[in-house]
Image (cartoon, rainbow, N blue to C red):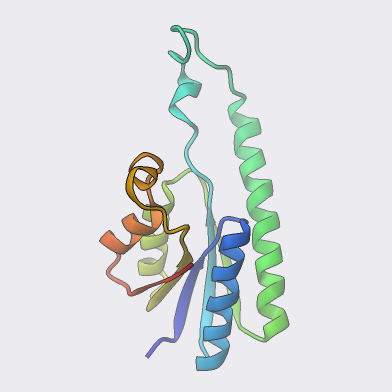
Length: 149
């Protein structure tokens, strides 16, 4: 059934629950995992026109470097978790993409047959204003998605 699971994480405590669940499932079924983290694009306000027509300065290279360093730390910890439970895992970092897009594309490119990710389960206006990468992934993924809450 499932042989290759993509686990999407962001370094949060909630994402850790998703990682743990995905690794446990992979161990149970004898599958392998691809662990993915994504850094979001540079915010639009960084390009000027921020507050009162004055752009908010941002150091683009520092932003990218910070994202890369954070991703390396998140993925190293996740890989160590996979090794501890005895699951074959590779890690992937996608830079400056919308998370849902990167999740669906990576799952498709790497022939994953299940996506595991965590969700806050926000409802109503909170979901409307904050957006939901989980909902977007569920909407566009050709691969089944297991949501951990």
